[in-house]
Every structure is written in C-alpha cells, then in structure tokens.
Image (tube, rainbow, N blue to C red; front, side):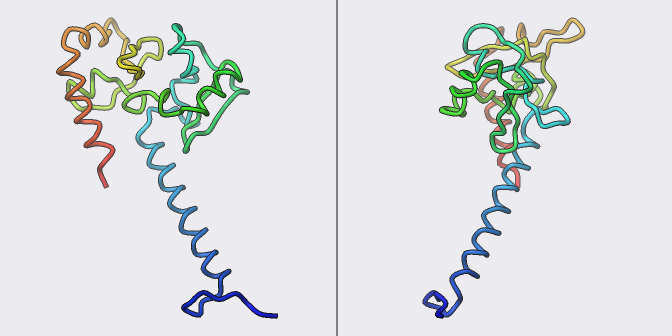
Length: 164
C-alpha cells in the first residue's frame, strides 16, 4: 500500500490536516471578531431578536426564536422562512450598518452605544440604528446633520474594525 506524498515528501493527509486546522482556526477567529464588532446580546443575537429583513419591508418585526440563522458568529432571528431565505441570498444587503451600534454616537463621539431596535433609518439601502431612551432620540439629531455625521461614523467604524 502506498501513501500519497506531496513534492516535499510530506504525506498528503498530514498536509490536509494542517490545512483544516489552520482554516478552522481562522474562521473561528473571524467569528469571534465579528461578535466583538456587533451589538449583540449575551446569546450573540443581533437587533435584540428583531428580523433584519423586516426593516426593509417597512416595519421592524420581532423575529421568531425558532427561525434563526448563524451568519459568521452573529445570530439572526426571522419572523418567516421567506425572510430567512432572502437574508441567506444577500446577507450583506441586510446586515445593519456599524454592527448595529448607534449611528449617531459613532459619528458624534466615535463611541459604540446601544440602540432602540425600533428607531432606525434606511439610507442608500443600508440599515442604520439609533439610541432612543430617556427622552433622547438621536435619530432627530442625526437628521439635522446627516452628511457630516455619516462621514465621521464611516471613518470611526473603519478605524474600529481595522484595529489589530
């Protein structure tokens, strides 16, 4: 019986094993990194369980905890299998901007601040969320200076996600 060996004399199965361990570790690290970037609850659920696709249909709806999808370590709930299927086809289209953190806070102070999942705005096909608690609706302030705040939020978010 012969063993398949690559051109350096290393058995093929050893090379395959090293590749699988390395790629699994890279994917696990990228999932962990996304979990740190996103505004998640203790169970890694984004948007406090709201169906991200429903925002694009006009009204945010609470997702069903039996219709879930783990996309790169971030868990999404959906209120229908149709919405789940739409998300699976184009997850980048539906994922919230800035990991679901408050767009205003990122633009104003560069901080990651929790959001009210019912306070949102869709801009150029992207979902932006805002803090709205204790008589402070940051969407109102965002609308007063959206261009500048969005530019600054984009810059702050890029700096945040590109940190080592």
